[in-house]
Amino acid sequence: MLLTTLSFCVCLSPQVPAYREAQRAVERVDDELDALLARFCAGDNRAAKALIELGEPAVDGLLALLADVELELVTRFTAANVLGEIGSERSVLPLIAALADAQYNVRRCAALALGKCGDERARKPLLELAETDPFVFRDPKSGEDLYLVREDARRALAILDGLEPGAARLKREAEILLEDASVLPPSPLRVEVKRLPWPFAGEFERQNLFNNYQQPTDGYVHGGLDIMNPAGSEVRAVDSGWVALVSTNYPEWTTHHFFVVAEEKNGARGWCYTHLDPATFTFAIGDRIERGAVLGKLVDFKLGANEGADHLHLNYVQFAKKTDGRYDTNPLVDPLSFFEREDRVAPTIDPTLRFVRAGKLEEFGAEREGLPLVSGKVDVIAGIGDVPRPKAGCNWMAAVVTLEIRGEVAAPWRKLVLDQRGEIGDPTAASALYVKHADKQRWLAGRPAFPPLHFVIATHSDGDGRLEAADSLHAWETAARDERGAARFPNGIYEVTIRAFDLAGNRSERTVKVRVGNP
Image 1 (cartoon, one colour):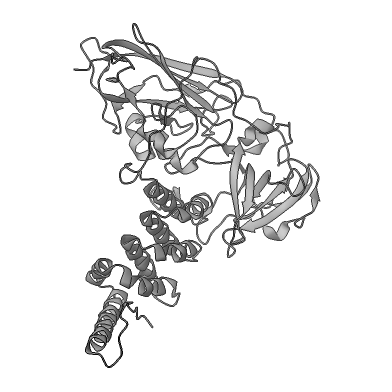
Image 2: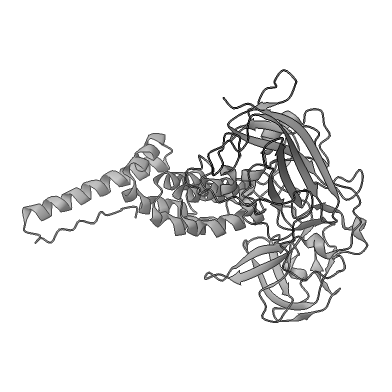
């Protein structure tokens, strides 16, 4: 059952000795492979290493183990690990299929294996897994809910993008500069914004909005609103339209069904609602929905022994049907743009801007006057957060961030760091712009957990405001030369200003001085 045959391009008769020798070679390889796979199933780590060294001839047998639901779980997910180390193109489609496996450890290992295979066909399925996988593990020590499969899918995407390990495959894009970093640039928004009613009864404060479109995590940026309400709460249509699709990436669970109400019949964009109980849907595909109509009820998000947060995930998307019958959905605009809310609080910018060596978190030291003394390639890091009212716990992120660097004799250098009033870009490129959760703890000691600050590497931007993996290749190159060969940033004192804007237009800024001291 586990035999994998090698193909020989030999056009010889069975009576020819060379042919018989080739046949015996095939049989020996098959016998050895069968023995290796048997040892692998018994948990022999040396067999796993031998299969990796064997490479392509081992792929079919390992794929058979991965797909065999009767085998021990550890054998199946370890088979995915080995396939990832081999990196065969033949593994890609079966590994993509394994992203829907009922066992979460198989999904985790299949995701990481796809990242290592480096095949672009895995990108969309990994994006879906990173957004929607329902498995939750509650850490018994901290009480924190951990979405382990999603985290590994994001890591796989980082591997696919060349960010982990290394970024050698990324291409540095040309820089786009601003004439004025103190004002909001023209909005990239290309969607008509109407004022719509909230999906739950009551005004803004009653929605219990936990986070929004700009909220970054270690591996991605959230692409919609999460509105917390008890399971069974009625969800109402925020706008009129036609039910264009009903789908789920996990048919074995009721927790992750979603549907889109398109603004036009046979249209390709509209409001996407996720986490309603499919047994309570009040409609069928093609039905006309009126604004305010009850669509169904929130699902109970409890998964086994793990308590989940019951919530509606709401976003405005462009959608397209894939060849496998499922759908791609891409967020087009921050949903908060459509709803009435009171926001008179400007974003928060941490008083300390940090100057680190590019690509590292190693801070530059200070010179005699106490100013940071920088040289070479420099990253500027700013802690930024935003809430709609004092004492709110919502962990939001400002919609627009700009960077400006000014010197006495140098022309100002102004860039748009982030603009999420429109499409996010690549949500899995969050690690290109944001410092990871574990790394930022060094700057958060003794501070309250909410509302948190998101530490932005402001120099990691090509200036278009969208999240892209290649943004990580940009820095403040203090030793750069202009077109005449003169120093672009001559040694001396510079003012570095970070500005942050929210959707309501409230603005904050923070300026610090730094000395450039190139050799």
